[in-house]
Length: 215
Image (cartoon, rainbow, N blue to C red; front, top):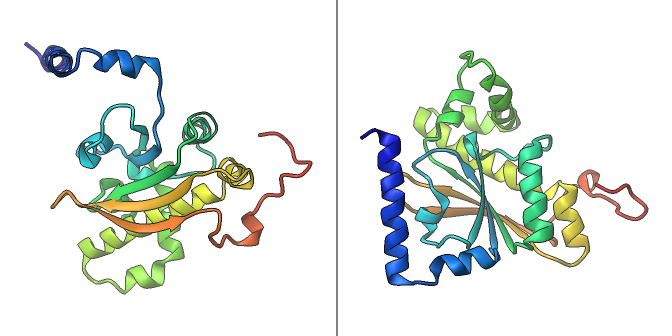
């Protein structure tokens, strides 16, 4: 039996266990999706959103990419964001990274990674903004972990700069934006930052929706 066949068998066992506990489990999931959270996390296989938050399917809407980046030109992320905010009406958006992130580590080198260079450049830009602080950290592991935190914080502010979030705020709606960092060593998520409609955002990033074009 190969790994894929084993995975399918594990799925059947999982589904049976769920039905044994609750015969209506899948019927409820199929009827409606009403999560309160959008999770923007890292693709790292060790950081599954539902597992580390002890939540059930249907409670968190999830988008994942390498190093949990929020990039203003990423149509994939923006499509997820728009659906989560305007259709699902999520109350909270969490940008969650993790210490020891391989993408962040790679961004601190001068290695050539082919197409991945274009993605990692966004983390390098975060480094450039905070170079003085980061260069003062002599321990390489601690420097990586601090850049992990700063990358999350920048991601939260990048969400606040989107017209999708600002339009929701202008209409008196959620979401609140949060940044958290997960430790692979102890399984704990630590809060870093919260930004909402009352938080300061440089005026140059504020949109005026009166008479503006549609998204």
